[in-house]
Length: 109
Image (cartoon, rainbow, N blue to C red):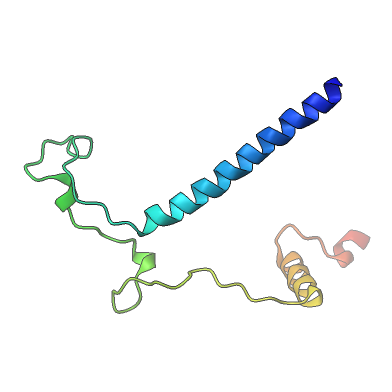
């Protein structure tokens, strides 16, 4: 009887956890698209600057800009698929070219 109670409680907790996960993912996707109004922030204005923190200009990282200075809105990581034989050949070539690799001719002597 105690086993059935344990399974029932665990099942209820699992459903609550999955429901919270789904709810949080949905709320996160809605919050990402929302624009928040500019507010004065006392935490960001610790240097006692005469201007509010929200009016400072946003400077993106240089890797997020293209050659003309515009922000890139495409994924930065694009992976192409290769077959196992090509991957093994590339790894073998890297291994053979590594400085710690001892070739067979050096091991025999």
